[in-house]
Image (cartoon, rainbow over all chains, first blue to last red):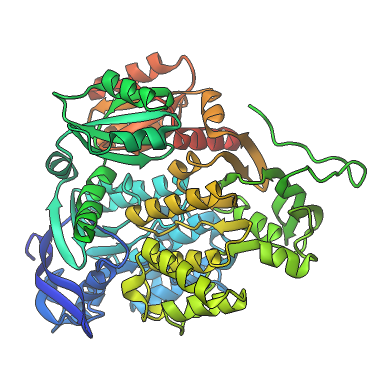
Length: 314
Length: 320
C-alpha cells in the first residue's frame, strides 16, 4: 500500500446549482493527523461523505486506503471508521450492546471479537460503564463510546466530524490524548473541529472557504504566512470602544475580540506593548494590560475565513 | 472566593430580590438515583449576561429547563421575573425566550418557513418580522440558505437558525443552552456581538457553554458541578482569586512533556495553548515542576491565568 492514506484530486460536488465542494485536491500520509477547518457550510462534511464512499463526487476523484471512492465504495467503507457530531448510538441499549451491534455491522464475531470488544472498552475507559444504558450517560462518555464503535474493526483511516462539539475541556483532553496515540500507532486521522486550540494537534491543516481549499500547511507555517505581524494580547475594561479607535490606524493590522479581551496585530516597527496600552488608555480604556502573544490558529482562521468575506461584502 | 448565595430556609424570608430576572433557589431534581440538581442556587440580575459553565452532566441543561418551567422540581423553586415559570402562563412565556440544546425546529420546514412559523407563534406584526428576520439572517449569514430545509443544515447553521427563532420576539429574558456548540469561530464572534447588543438594550441573558473563553465574556459566571454551584462571581474577580500559578511550557517534545506533566501531582491542569501547553500548578511548586521538565529540554514561562485554567484546576480539586 502506498504511504498516502487519502488522495483527493480535483474533487467536486454539486447539489443543484450549489457547488458544495469546488475542485479540492490534497493528500494525507499514513499516520498523519489532518485537520479540515472552515466555517459552517464551507463544505467540510460533504468532503468527508465523499471520502467515506457515501456520496459520489460530481467531478474529480479520491482514493482512501488505496481504494477509489467512486468505483470501490464498499472497500473504502470497510477500511475506514467514521464518527460524526451526532454520535449515532442506540440510546436505549447498554454500552456493551452498542459495541456488539457495531461489531456485527462490521462483520466481526466470535472469540476474537469478544476480546477486541473488551480491549476497546478498556482503551476508551468505558469498562465501568459497560452495563449502563447509553442514554443515561453524559455527552463526554457517549463520545468515547462512539469513538470506540468507530475503531472496533481497526480502520486504517478514521474520519472524525466535529467529534468534540459540546464536550467539556476535561473530556476533550482525554479524547485527544487517545487520538494522538492512535495516530502514533499508524491510524490516519481526518478531523474537523471548531475548537481551534485542539486543531494545534494536527500535523497539517486545510482551510475551506465556500467549497474551496484556500490554504493547506502545518499550523506553524499557516501562522507565519497569515499572521506575519506582532500579536498583542490585551485585557482591561471598556476595551470595545477604545479598540474601535485603533482600527485602521497605520501599523495596526488587526483588532479582534478574544475572550474578554482583544488580540491586536501590529507592525513591530510602529507599535509595542507600551504604546498600545497608552493609546487604549487615552481612548478611554481602563486597567489595560498588554502582553506579547503567540499567534493562534484562531488568528489564522479569522485572517483566511473572515477577512476575505468582509472584503467581498465591500 | 465567594460561595453561592445560600437560599433562605423554606418559606419564611424567601423574598423576591428586587430587580432579579432569574432566580434558582435551592433547586433539587432527581432522575432515578442521580441528583441532577442538588441544591442549586443563583440569581441573575436584570440586564445581566450570566454564564453557566460546567462539565458534561454537571446539571446545566436541567437548570435551564427548570428555569423555563419545563420540568417539575423535587425541591426548591425557580423564578422568572418573580413568577413561577411553570404556572406563569402567557405572561412568563411572552417575556421568555428559550433556545434548547436539542432539535427545536421543524426539520421539514425551510429556514425562512421556520422563522415565519415562530414569528406567527409570537404574533409578531408583519413589518416588524420583516425587519428583524432580515437583520437576523444577515448576522447569522443564513440569507443564502433561506430555502434550505432545517434538516439539511450543518450543525452550526442549525444552531444559528434556532437562535434567530428564539430572538425574533425580543424576549426580556433569554435562556440559551450551549448556543454556540458546533458554531464556527467567525459566526461565534458574530453571535456574541449580537448578544452584547441585546444585553446593551436591556435583555437579560443566561447561557450555558463548554467554551471557557466565552465564560470570560459574561458579566457573571456560575461554575456548576454535580448539580451545585462551585463558584459564582465576576470572571475577573474569580480569576484574581485563583490559588494556582499558571505557566506556558516552552520547548521539549510534546508527547513526552505531556506524559511527564500527567505524572506530577503539583500540576492541576494542562491545556493546549497555541503549539505549546499551558499548565496550572500549585502555588510555590513551579521549581519542582520546572526541575522535572528540565531533562526533556522544556522550561516554564509565567502567563496570566485564564478561565480554562480555573475550570480545569477547580474541577480537578473537587474530584480529588
